[in-house]
Length: 354
Image (cartoon, rainbow, N blue to C red; front, side):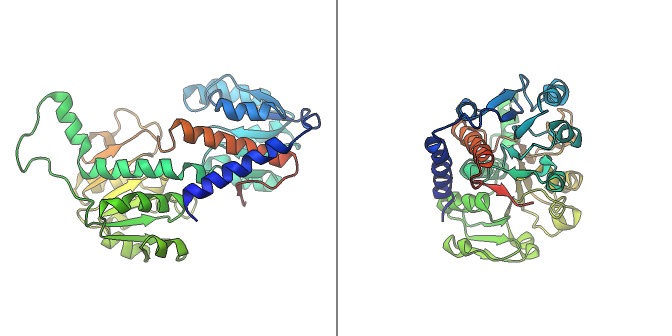
C-alpha cells in the first residue's frame, strides 16, 4: 500500500468521528491543553468543537518555549485529560505530575516521539500517538533536495554567488551524478519508501535498504534487502530515515563512517543524534567521505559559529522536512482526531505502542 494512499485513508478515517459526533455536551467538560500558539487553526477548531481547549500564548520551538512557555504550560495543565504536544522540547516528569491522574493521552504533532518521555508515559498508563504517514511525501522531498544539494556542492556554489567570485572552468566545482548510482536507505518505512519512489525517475542504478527484516514493499520498489555493512560499503548515497531510540542513537559513528566509500554522500532526515556529529565532522574535514546533507543536527538550532558550518562539503537545512502548509495542517488534524478518539472511546488512529 503506498504512502499517499495511507495518508488519504488516515485523514478520511480521522474526519469520520467528527461528522458522526452528534452530541458534544458530554465531552465539553474535558480539558485539552495545546502546547504552542502555532498549532494549525483547522486542527484547533476541531478540538474546540468538542472540548474545553486551553492553549499557551507562546511558541514552543524557540527560546520562548524553553522559558515563558514552560511556566505557562505548568499553570495550564492541571486537570487536563489530553495534551497536544506541538513542540521539540522534552515532556518532563514535572509537567506530567502537574497534569494529574486524569491525563489519558499525549498526542504529539510529529512522527518522532523520543522527546515525549515514552518510558514515563508507559509507567503512568498514558497513551501516546504521533503523526507518521502524513509527512512521508514532504520529508522525502527534502531528502531529495539534500541529495542534490550535497552531490552538486550547493554550499560551495552558493558562497560563490554571494561573493561574486565564480570559479569559471570546464573542470571547476564538479559534483556527482545520481544517475547510475547506488542509493542505500537505512530505515525502509514510509519516508524511506517515499524517497525511493521519488528517485525512480533519476535513473538510479540500484536501491538497497537495511533493517530488522525484509519488507514486501522492497520487491515492488526494486529495492534489495541487504545487511547494514553491505549497504554502507556499496552505496554512493546513504539516506537515514530511522526513529531515534537507544538502538539507533549514534548508529552512524566513526566505525560505520569508515565502512563507507570515499565518494559516499550521507543524508540525514531522521534525528540529529542518530549521527555522531563529531565523527561526521572529522570524516568530512578529512575527506574520508565526499559530502553530507543534513536536515537535522545536534543541537538544534546549530549555533552560527559551529564548526560544521565551516565545512564546504556539508549542505544543512534547519529541520524543515515537514514544513509545508498542507502537511503541517494534516499533522495537526491527525493529532486532534487522536485526542477526539481517545476521549470518546474510539480506536486511536496512529498509536505508538509503548
